Length: 256
Image 1 (tube, helix red, strand yellow):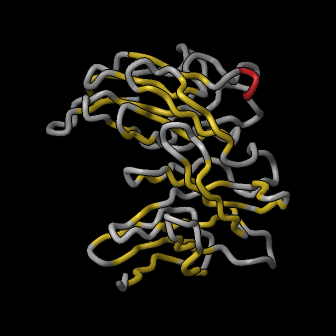
Image 2 (image 1 turned 60 degrees about the vertical axis):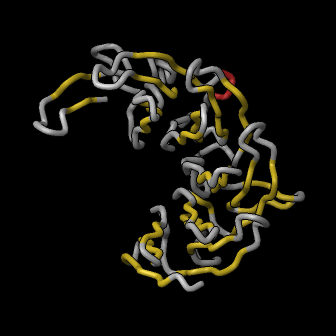
């Protein structure tokens, strides 16, 4: 992590996730900034010989400007897999911070203490041939957290992906809707209360990848916008929804 002066571009501070001479703990997600100014960073795995080297596979709390380490949560050793990155950016709401790991779990922490509040499985652990990964940042509408996930089982049936709503205080599942594709991009929600969920992976010859428009109250699919591989998060702005996939960028007019 590097901090720069926005006015001059001058480097202010650096924070390294592993000791000098080592590789690992890459930051390949966006940094989250709390109202207090504290920074929260999610990190990747360390080398194969020590995947939890230094601050690898962690959510790290840093001070503004100086990037001094203020706290850390590292994935429990028993849940570390061959590719257990924190690829998802942290989500902040209230006194909480959380992120989804490629081990399939979402971890919610207290911002002040960095102590674990709860953890819940959102999808399967990432592995070769998997239908996407648990790297989507959940959307929060002030009442519920909305997750996009990869391979999961709903009522005894395995699906390539899902979208689900959970209580923020406990992680309890409110509803879960299976999808034909795994979800990698983060869900987004507009002021009218429509949830947009981009689906990333579908096997050749199966249901095409798409943006699913979902009712956040019930999980009911309202519409499917199918074009190409959807990795990016959809964005709502000025009465439009913008999406990007392997075929290009699209602007959708939102009708009330």
